Length: 553
Image (cartoon, rainbow, N blue to C red; front, side, top):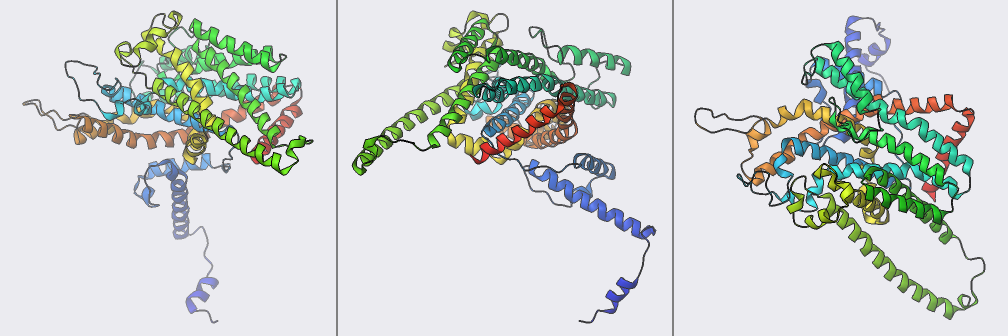
């Protein structure tokens, strides 16, 4: 086939890459490819499809910022997520973090939706209730019980590997697992929150957020005090732990304190028999609930649930093994047929009863999770629960009365979600839930500053048609309105639909820029600190192999 003169000229022509026109073309090509990769990276975070030309309309500085962040976060390719036996916990953690975002968004911007259906914050106004205030539906913005779900999941995750080693009578491995958690946990829990507080200081410095102190030196001193007393000081949870730079970080010192406490509990109970260990743990859970120490009860309760999970996994393995010497009546065809039919009938009845029990526990827990923030003592269905709360669980703040039932409901949620296959497979192990679970810690940390930066501009103010002082309003409140229940609900949903992609984008970048480097740092510090670094690497390999074996089992 003969080549055209243009093709021959293009092949023979030699152009230096330092030529200005060539350098400009190369720069445009690289920038276009970078923009395409950025959109490919971010499009799964957004609720609507985006064109590859989106970034071409952005200012050059913003596009350069996205390109820089992409280069920083793409130094190591992502590995595809693999499901394992506890992947549902990751999905549950991700959904809990998302619900906490919705809750903080609702409580700050749409507080009229927080009471129970038919109950108004201001009886004089008597606003028409919205359908999202109904039982079970209001769980979408019930963020307070989700903190308790976090604590139960943390207790489960910290315990399961150590309990596997204990049941195998491998106490050296158990001690190694506990040592690893004790070294890594403080770095993992305190590092990212402190960095997020630094970013808030930067926002304050450039006047993107409110100013707290006039000079940079005073702000730095105040930040050091906040990082020490509100993040890394876990032993006085009775004081106000809300940081002035991010009020949502009050849970960090509580989780750190009780994580270390749980590790000591596992070490103390490691030599007991399984039945004795479970009895002692359950007794301690009830004791902590009676004394009002709900966080300790939730962490130990997570340990009990992990014990049940390990026992269930062992039981499944034994059931898969064939019988070595089956009974004589099973050898004959008649005996085998009759026994099989009776066994199938009995097992189907038991499975139906178990499913009813699990669904009932899940429904009861979701009902408790809809606990209203105000007037719970006069809300139908909750007045009796308030009466049953131990006095120690309600010492000063009436809101503390929720924690008793939230602790019990959180344990019920984790227990039932593991055993309800349709919930675990369809919801908790879905792609979005697993992704949200992977960056759940970052979501929890960054959603407050992101809301503070953008929520006022997105929501605006409602219109004021009064004479002389009337205004058209701005944002979603001015465009949609907040006069009727439908308008308020639509404004609530539209506002979060605009803000949640920003939270996920910020959390994704925070995870790869801050959270994951701190995880690697914690691992390096452990390797440096232990007497035998090869043991740490060997344990990592065994853990990965064990997870792979479970996945294919």
